[in-house]
Length: 427
Image (tube, rainbow, N blue to C red):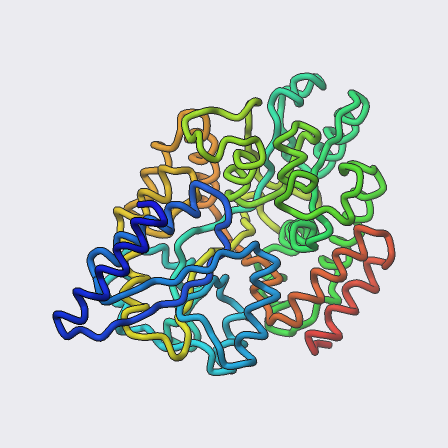
């Protein structure tokens, strides 16, 4: 449904609501899916809900990731919280619960909650209370340009950190930039630092860090050492320290233009590559290069298993003063039909368990690689949430800030671990 039709639906809906005596309701919705097909998917679902509920108007605000993060905290502090807004759960949600910014929707979402991935759903639960739901599950891994690998004579993907460093050098020797990273946004770089912590420490150490709020441990320090080792190889695209994630001159743009061979990113990367390649409106057209995926390699001597994962879940939480229709709309977004749409358009891995089978129905060029990501996610022996979301906003910012300093060579591994611990309050 186009914008004009949507406006007409809303206008007619208002008249119908008035005639039937139903109170007119407006739901404000902030999300960060600013590329197609996902952005249009959300709009179409909102239009469908409004058509079924003529007394409801859904006012959508679409923001880029960093813009949303910059806007949501001032909105909460001003008491002007959106009714439905983007969330990754974890420590940031805990902050929002303590601020009274979100509402208990446990009873309202009970009919649908058992259809969703339980691990992802748990990220939106605080002390047994459900404040939101996931729509997308995440698994970070390496996206790589198969053609560039073959051009450099690389026929096997690396399974160990040492092998990854060898691949990087082989690509460099072939005149190919090995890695794209948007270190200007910080969080894409933190994937490297965090995944190395997971591989070196494993589940036990990561859980102990969370219990003690103490990052000043050998696994974290050694992760910083490996980051420095990586940076010393100069494997990134020019200007990586200021580069954003999703822009023509950023991480996704470098991959789409074949200016880099690898990218450590979540499953949403594929849609961003397609958008940067000008294929957002051509879901059946393949990328101009073959794309592959492999998990983060094992780190020799580390306690983590090669099947330990790193990621999280994209979701939405309901604002404290949101009308009851908001939770109902959220359950509508997550029904099997809508989640299948999310999967088949290539937007991501749906949280609705029944809808995950639709991953194989994505465009022919994308379905197999997305199925590989889903297989790794389902086989994960441990799954660490993004550290900048797992912890409070303050601690998450410290992780990202110290990562940026490590990538710039402006701090040491020991100093980085100590600085994060100082913010977290551990010892």
